[in-house]
Image (tube, rainbow, N blue to C red):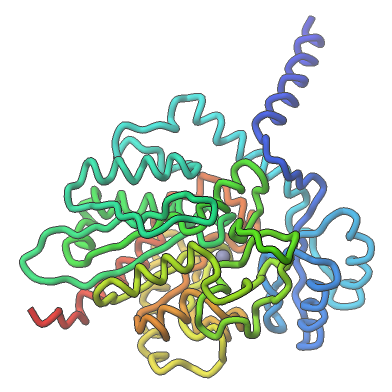
Length: 428
Ligand SMILES: [Zn+2]
């Protein structure tokens, strides 16, 4: 009897896992390997692997001594291992990508079955789990229905026709205030970006320790830039990174939206191959999401800071991405980054390395931060790379959303105070 029950339970478990995941793309058996190149030649060889094996780099080859994570298919194991053993060797960092994806889905479904997915108020919303696009849209409506100073503005549509929204938090004030724009999810597999920021904005609305941030600064929050891609990560391919646009000349859909800005577009650190993960697109701002975001931000008054949110590797990056020549504001950006680093570390002891994007990670072109700094003229321009440092990579367990949110909030509070203290007003 007992044995039979166990058998039935096992069958049920397999069935639940199958329906629970439901994603069309299966990563069973795929692994994430970590290599630390020892020389510039090894960095170059790793880059060449990208073309040869169409490897999905989770962190890019940058410089000797800095680790590189990439996803490997079982059929590539032998050949890649041989190639890497001729270099510094490798370490298996995630032994089965699919099992992380299954665990993530099971934990989500468990909460959903407890009735925690839908919320009746901003406070009752469950910030300790990831939410699909539909629920993020619902959360925006909860916010605007509860707070009269919060407005939702549509600034465009995605390639597949979904609305692009910004939430504007403009508390009434006797004098004019500075403005900070924060965005998330331009790379749609980086789920932690939106999840942690929804928690952060709830804290700024409700936690007396942080409500001063909205008293002193106007906040424009774009919670989902790449909505189409985000929907794909929930129902199709959990590790999708690009947009979902299709062009006439390629079988590979999507563009890396963070290589598509009209700022040193189509240069080093981006690919012209439509099938590559870092494809810069057929033209600058070819992507509906990028084009509308740019138009919207340029149409606002003065913006005092622009923060774009990514994961993972725990970094605070500022311009430039396209060149190792320091930007004109290097000293001030470095000083503010250090303060943010200190505040973030004080929360849970996590280190966020900071510096210019090109020398801290690698050269990139056509990115949000170079565009916001050079084209939009916003000096305080940052890219935050959130948790972790590779144990889970993009499939960060939901129990890290709130701790990660708490430390990111500490960094944003420093930035909020900085723009408040350096604000010269609009002359009113
Ligand atoms: Zn990213």
